[in-house]
Amino acid sequence: MSRMNKVLCLMMILVVAPKVFAMPNITDALEHAKILFEQQAIVDAEQAFLALQETHPNESFYYLGRVKLASNQFDEAEEYLEKALRLEPNSADEYYWYAKINAEQIKHASIFSKLSYANNTEDAFLAAIDKDATHIKAQQGLFYFYLSAPSIAGGSEAKAVRQVRAIEALSSHAAIKLWIDFYLQTGNDEALITYTNTLLERKTIDEAVLFKAGIALQSIKHYDGAFAFFRTLIVIKETKHYAAGLYQIGRTAVFSEVNVDEGIAALQTYLTLEISTDGPDKNWARLRLSQLYMLQGNTLGAKKLIGELKSARISDKDLIKAIRQLRI
Image 1: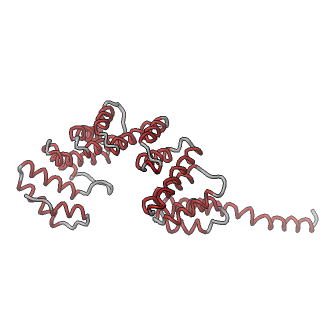
Image 2: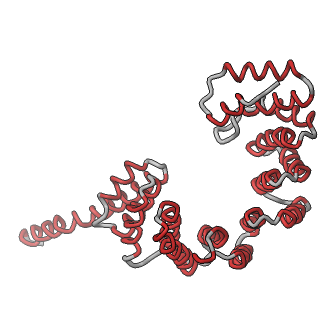
Image 3: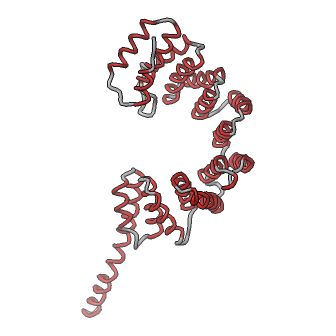
């Protein structure tokens, strides 16, 4: 190869190299921005996606919309998702999050704007499902829209039922939770009791479903049914729901004023456990235990716990109010 050819080859390499090596850097930057978002480093994620708007506009607008939604900046979130949807291709996730943003806007909009946001919400959920019929979150979102929206805005119990049945074909587990919510929200206590009775007969059922069913029955004061579900949870002894089952047995005993000894034993055990941050604070358990001691006639035990609660540093306003309302 002549000297001139070598020089030309070197020049070509230098011209092409920046483009070749820049592409992985941009790709790495996009993946890094996504990781920041998934790790909930919202401020850093926003800055990362702002820097990628020119090279990756569709994905940047989509994630910036979600960043703004996470920051409760709904107008900005709406604008970014609309920008993303104006760029092809569109994904089911883009439509799903656009629906979620519009659903949030309904809560804060004027009476004149609510209907428009409701229409956008339904249309976007339907578009997400049209893109991907197996998108469970979009299917669930549409169910809750039909269940909660007034009829003038597209809400319908009949549509909600059809939606649950469509979801059953994808996930029987997801549908169970929706049936419970459907019967609760429509005030059909008898149907809720009948349906939850069938759940106890199943050999395999998710602990989260058992807990949800117990709470639902507790809320309609069907305490026998609630006890049955919470007892099943503590037999399984899966760490998170075992603790929740113990606490709810005690709480249900307070509300129902029956099975007091069982409730006391459950709360005493609860107080010996390591409780996760999303579980009821142990001071709530002490409050419920003091109430059960009073029902049992153990005034000394109740006074001791109440004294401990009143001297404790507590920031939970609801708990402070409940403690003040205690009477012996």
